[in-house]
Image 1 (cartoon, rainbow, N blue to C red):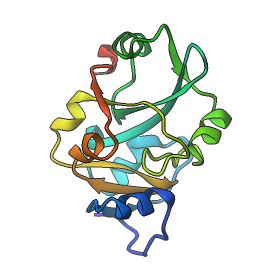
Image 2 (cartoon, helix red, strand yellow; image 1 turned 90 degrees about the horizontal axis):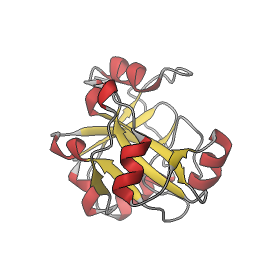
Image 3 (cartoon, rainbow, N blue to C red; image 1 turned 180 degrees about the vertical axis):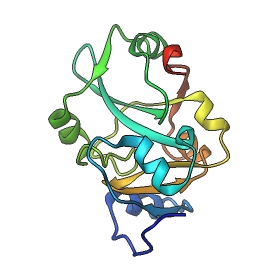
Length: 166
């Protein structure tokens, strides 16, 4: 599946997953700047729809939140704000996202986040048999069952995919 077969050192995300007793598989790949989920899915030979992006956003008061979205979809911030009961949601600037998460942009994982923040997951992600999500560094995804997102992270399901990105 993955081209690399080398062991990947621990990250805050994998430490968190192990501490929670979550079974996961490791999927390293060659990180490509601005390659995103298209590139990781191609290298790993998986459907981009099953590769989940971890997006750090902020509300109207600059409070952070996380949105988990299919790799091949965009977030409708208007739909998300409405479902979250907020006036406005927008992406954080990369340096702000990094400060909130403790992760380098391109390697952001929802596991082992620096501080507790509201977490939302596109509801259809929970219908997939397996997902691939960042494991805490660039070029490294972990494979998990999607129910981990709601069971371990208490992610709130939403319907926030932009219909234009389908």
